[in-house]
Length: 319
Ligand SMILES: [Zn+2]
Image 1: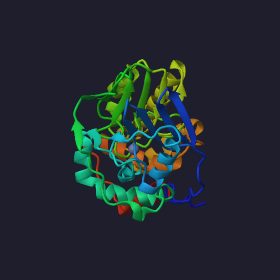
Image 2 (image 1 turned 120 degrees about the vertical axis):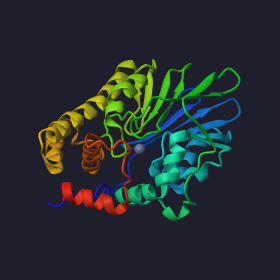
Image 3 (image 1 turned 45 degrees about the vertical axis):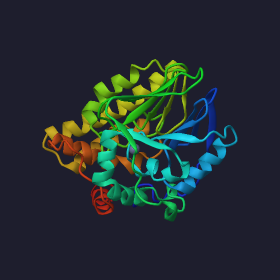
Image 4 (image 1 turned 90 degrees about the vertical axis):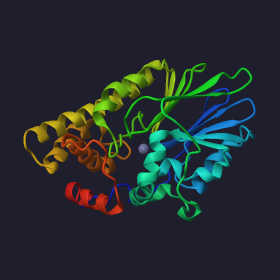
């Protein structure tokens, strides 16, 4: 049977779950679709992630508005991927915050990434004509940025943990509540996408830095909220194990003089028993294997995915 390209055949709307993790700290998860969050300051809101289109973002904002009518001062983007940033205009945020490298990646490949992700995940692009153009951060930083929330609400700390899912992922940390928004650096019972990743850094020092936050709740990029230190550790461990198995199998085939197709089969065989039933596993794996193969070939900076290159790699590995 021919596998439909990426997530193009996934047309069923996912059930959304709204959670108030602590007073004024919110997350919306959706059975493996990209998660979003929000944190109340004294007289403003910080939103985390923007969804794929303004129309999709507005559905999230409508839910949020049942709990708070504070204006959005900051929209924080964990990284540059289209399904997380192109809905930004709906927030009316005073500032759009991201990592320095995220701004650079949007300039370098934002347009191609938009086309690529639209082809891979069309369902997430609700009314794509509502997107006014690329999303540009207004504030960027390299290491850490602290947002005082006002009153007795403490700080929100935005932190770079190293190269991982992309060159410019950031996490959002609430030290008082011990809640971590980890973006796509950590997934909870959803497959990892590593097509723009730095596997070796991510699986080692970057996830070590994520794990160093003493989190008691973690909102990953996809999947349910991990609640409790054990669940947080399990989500991080699962993400690391996925990366380690990918590195082990693709690395073995590459070192042994095999082909990219051999590497894909080896990775699939190793990962499918544990991860095959999780969202976007089949969709991501060809792109993941191709990117790690490139890394092993010495290509440090990820090649740009275009709609055409997506189809070529898919055809070669899943076709
Ligand atoms: Zn991503």
